[in-house]
Image 1 (cartoon, one colour):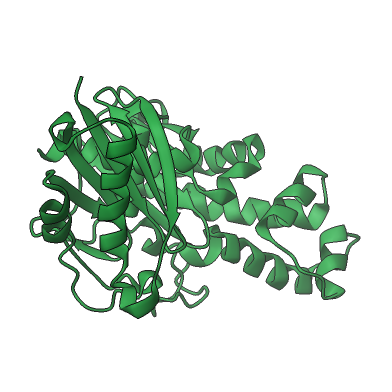
Image 2 (tube, one colour):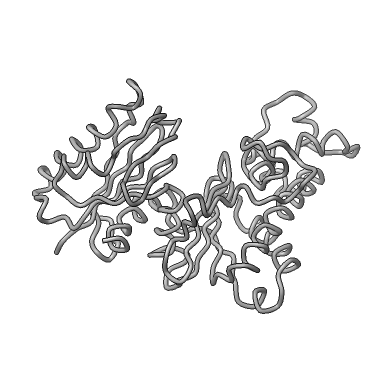
Amino acid sequence: MKKLIGIDLGGTTIKFAILTENGEVQQKWSIETDISNNGRNIVPNIIESIKYHLEIYGLSREDIIGIGMGSPGSVDLENGTVIGAYNLNWESLQPVKELIENGTGIPFFIDNDANVASLGEQWIGAGKGSNNVVFVTLGTGVGGGIIAEGKLVHGVGAAGEIGHINVDPNGYTCTCGNIGCLETVASATGIVHLARDMSEQYAGESKLKYLIDDGQQVTAKIVMDQAKENDPLAIKVLDKFNFYLGLACGNIANVLHPETIVLGGGVSAAGQILINGVDHYFQKYTFPQIRNSTKIKFAELGNDAGIIGAASLVKTQS
């Protein structure tokens, strides 16, 4: 039986997997991402690692249908190049496809890392069995991917940048230069920003307010944990967070009518308290046909979404 290789290229770690055509992960390994020398060592290290692991697993290049990879930065799908992946020190154009195909002799496919994670969840995760899935990843920022009628939506190139949906024209300034992007309020940094601002206006008893006023470090996890403990300020902060995310998900669904909106990333670890709150506002801002059919779910693949989705590129693009 022939295999697929999936690669999840990150700023600190490169994760690899060998999978069956059905998406079953058979072997996994990782290497550190060497971003020295303007990231020139990254692709050679990937090639070397693939060749070494094929050898130790007793596989040849003829056993592999193809290699798929998710990468940060701006990805040219047709040419297989990447530019602007600043966490990799890839400021200039990187001919990734050409180098890896020449180095391994195996067909290679590449897409943006958030898009690739959405493919993983759609293939065998929370969106399994659906051709219409939106993936929203809630981490340091907010990213995402859109799968419509079984295909990733790329637009002219930057479709799926869910973090830049405007949810508050009078809100915080985003790293993109605009004001009020979802990323400024629904990311791990965004919820802390909300907590600090709302704490200034809050006069009641609250452990979260005490932590902020005392100058202690406050994280998204602390805010969520305090909300679960019924801290009144934390509940207000989480409700505001849920409002923004529910509004954005509602707008997405009203336009695209996906079967499933999948929430992933570190912030989603808050659990049911988050889903319930987001769904409350989602119900409020969607019209009946959407409200009654689109479901919000948590991602199921965790850290494997990237490698699994990357491998699925081989199936969808080859």
